[in-house]
Length: 35
Image 1: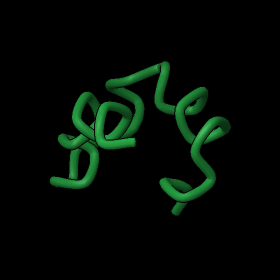
Image 2 (image 1 turned 135 degrees about the vertical axis):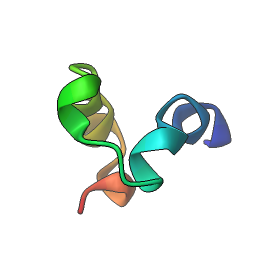
Image 3 (image 1 turned 180 degrees about the vertical axis):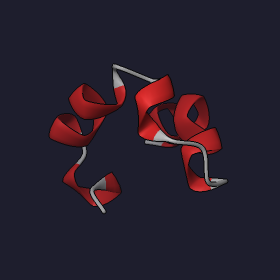
Image 4 (image 1 turned 30 degrees about the horizontal axis):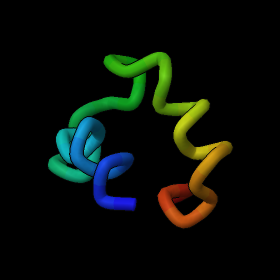
């Protein structure tokens, strides 16, 4: 599961999700990352 979090670790740092269009797809796969 960490493999999914690593690419998007920057989002947790406060970066806007708009920088990663795939972020929405990741959230869909991992509801755990949903805000």
